[in-house]
Amino acid sequence: MKTVAAILLMLLLLSAPAAAQSSLEADMRDAAAAYERKDMATAARLWKIWADKGNAEARTLLGAMYWSGEGVPRDHTEAARLYLLAANQGYARAQNDIGFMLGFEGPPPHDDVEAYKWLTLAIERYTAKNQDRLDQARKDKATLAARMTPAQIAEAERRVKAWKPEP
Image (cartoon, rainbow, N blue to C red; front, side, top):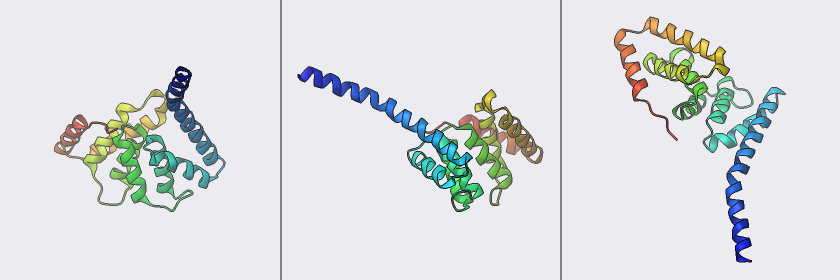
């Protein structure tokens, strides 16, 4: 009897990560569907749950809601905080978003060196699935480069090489 209980316990423990993953995938799908049907409260609630658990995609999508004020109060500081958390995890869209904020849209002062760094990292991580975002990030980086000094670009490139993702 102890052997059967031990086997059941082991199976339960081994299946827990799969169940958690399934819950993440289901919640992310439900949040995206809620967003599409303009149920912003549900989308924000679900993304917040996973953002608080450290999911980079949820952090980025919730950050976008704070940026635009959809379903949550418009709060660029909170958007930047969420984007930066996800960007530091290596999530390309968040890297792109924080780079764009720092270089073009965020509250002044703009930081072209950091913006260039984040856009470069995003460009390195985007896949063909994100071709439109990749193309725009390249254009934004070129715009930044045109207004930066060679020393600023060198510093940004140094930061790119030194960057390491956080868990």
